[in-house]
Length: 236
Image (cartoon, rainbow, N blue to C red; front, side, top):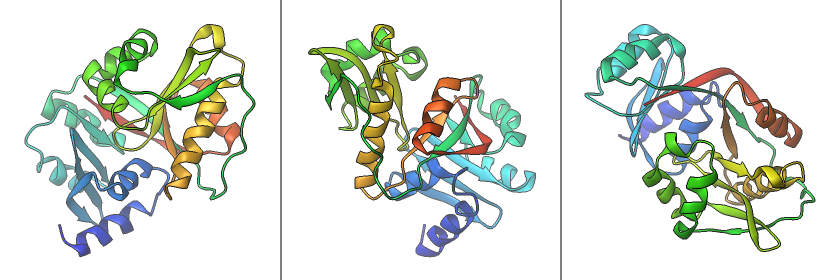
């Protein structure tokens, strides 16, 4: 794709930057290829799947027609989710809302008893045992995330108490604190650490939150994140 396609894609996505936080991140990180960009929609290929946003059914049908097969689609409107599921045989859907921190100033540190430091692939067994969504993410995916340099553990008295990482498209996630260490500020400290780290790289920190996760919504609002009214849908 040429420079004009990139400009068109960014122009479309920036109409709703909060809704499109993940697509903008994937483009900014250079991990996405623009397959289609117009005034009525954008389709990206990123690593293991596709990201798509469409204004209407005609645009959605045209872009879905460009995909022969996939095991992962990040849909930014609900109206074509069922069509995409049937076309690609994607039985599972995770609904999320985007949360972005759009301020430029770093967040203040949160008091907690944890030391936060990088962890690598040798931390995988601990993550597999304790991460709530380990099964749906898969061991290979988590190994890749641990090898990315974006994964950090929280340690209390030298013992692992929790962790945080970054998903493939650049969202803050993979956050878990062991039950015995909760309500001690560790989750907030991890989120602040990762947010400030992304800010220092000149990027916009963002997360994706499932509608029923009240604790995560409360944490992000407390830290000053703006949360989208619209949902996105991960099909796999």
